[in-house]
Length: 314
Image (cartoon, rainbow, N blue to C red; front, side):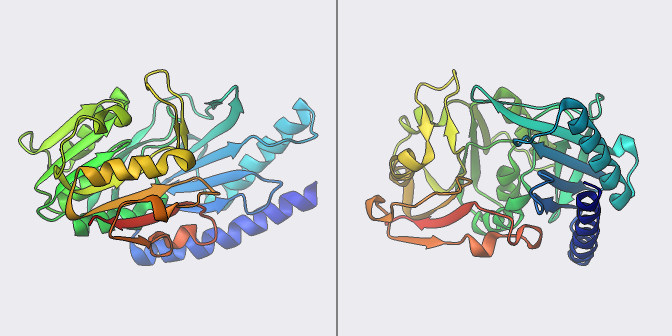
């Protein structure tokens, strides 16, 4: 086992040196370093300024509980050594699927929030309390694209999470922005992000806590010019009237968005479903461009399975 620990340390040292050099050059303070590069060490490791965030995806192993704890403790010691980070700045979450739900445990019990900057915008991230931190690092370039497209546009951000696309649309001088998510926590988080950036204007920024599938049924045609659509792969939340399966439902979901979009309006559609296949022939659009490759940041090259499309209305 010692050979495997040595291989893990060597791999992590090499990758961190390479990625952090590019990050410094591009003035990026939050980035991914490791994504299960070695199957024996099923971690995703991200840097948030002076903090290191580690997510362990529970995998099948033949270790006893005692052996597993030794493996985990040794792995964390290696991570701490490679990143030269103090224990209080190192956060671990163990994610596992149990009856369809994800659970996690914390290395640190105290609440830890910090403000991070990306392309001139600031975001609150939480390293301690939720399954995710509040900022999906793989969408760094996508957020920049949204900002460039948003000028004087009526923008709709669906499945908005913590509103990072909303902030970028506001920074890009959007005419109005409607932010929709089913979670009260995330809607409040999105409003807080916008306010922190001194961009919030209650006359043109609207936050709606609602099931997106229901929301879309009540919107009139030609209501928006730019729609960001980044749904979960699957959702059967008790608060939803319908179950969402993105492979099965993406055509109807995208076509609903096209109906409320202005002529030649644009949808930025993204999905994390690894085996996703876009059924382009059934989508009522003028043009569909796969922009996956151009939206992959340097720290996710070879590590990212999500898809991203730019869909233009007729």
